[in-house]
Length: 416
Image (cartoon, rainbow, N blue to C red; front, side, top):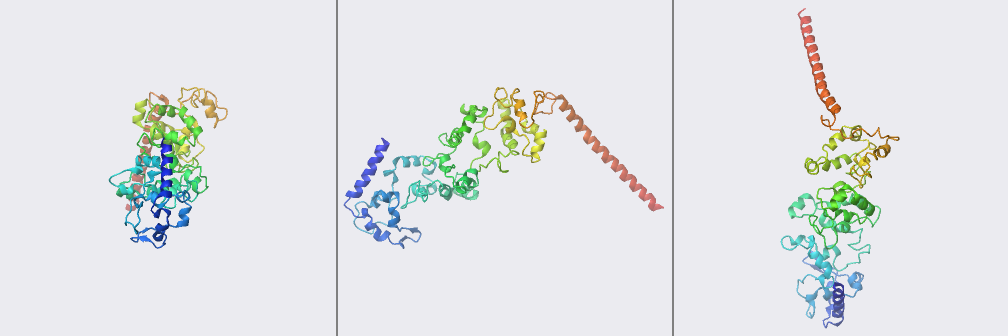
C-alpha cells in the first residue's frame, strides 16, 4: 500500500507540473533571478541554481518542477515572491524515508533542533544525484566525509553542543581496517556508516531497535562476516548472547567500534600481545566471576606462566588466550569439541609443541598460588617470599657492617 501511495504522489507531482496554470513550474520564471550566479541571500546563502547542473540531478531528469518542492509558490504570479519560503517537504514523494527519519536520532524535535540532520544535509538540495553515482553525497565512498560534517567534532565541542554522538567517530573510522579499505584501496564493499547504523531509521545504540545495540550488534557485523557469525553463535559467548545475557562479549567488546584495526597491527585490541588484556576485561572481573561461578585471576595466573612472561616481553609467537581457547568458536572445556577439552589438549598444545602427549598436558595451566589449588606452588611462594627478603636483608646488614668497619679503620689511620 505504501508503494502504491508513493507512486500516486509522484504521479500527482508530475500532473501538477504539467497542468498548473502558473508559470514558475517550468523553471524559466524562477531562473530569471535564481539563474544569476551572483544571486545571494543576505550575503551568506547562495540562491543561484545552475540550470544545466539541475537537469542532471535525479529531480531534473524526472522533470520535477520548482513548485513541486516549493509548494507555497503554487499559483504565484507576482514576483519576486516572499523573501522566505517554507522548507521543502520531501515526504510528498518520499513518505517512508521521511517517516523513518522523524523517528530516528536525526529526527529529534524541540530543543537543539538546529543540530538535527535534515534531508538536504545528507543528500544536498538542487543537485541531488543517485546514490550509485560517484559524485553523489551518499555514494558509499563519500558517506564517511558526508557524516563527518557532524560527527568529527572534538570532545569539547561535543560537550558544548550537547551532541550525544561519539566525538571524532569518523576520524577513528578512517584509520580503521574498514576505513582504509574504503579510502585507500577503493573497496566500496567495505563497511561504511549506513551499513552499521542504518540510513534514515538510525536509532541510539541504547535502543533495542538499533543496529548497533548489544542485542543486534553481532547480526549487523554478520551481514559481512557471515562465517564468523556462525562460529560465534555456536560458541559459549554466542549461545549466552542469544539467550539474552547482557554480560557476554559481542564483537565490539573485543574489536572496538570505529577504531577496529587488523589483528596484526600492534595497536589492535586483538594483537597477540594485547589479547590477554582484552580477555581480562571480563575474566578478571570479580563481579562477573562470582555471578557466573567462573575461576578467578585468569590474567594474573597467565602472566605467571612462561607464555605470559614471553608475551609481556613482546613475543608475538607465545601462546595467548586465543591460541588455546579459540577465537570466535570458544567452547566450554566440558564440550568434546572444545580446544581445551582434556582429550583435545594434545592437539591444541601440539600446534606449538609437536608430539605433545596426554602426559604433557596433564598439568594445570592457570595455577593460582593458594594452598587449596596447588600446595607445591603455595609452599614455593611462601618460601621465596620469606627467603628473598631475608637474603636481601642479610646483604644489607653485611654491607652496613663492612661500611661501619671501614669507617673505623680510616679514623684509626688518621690518628696515627
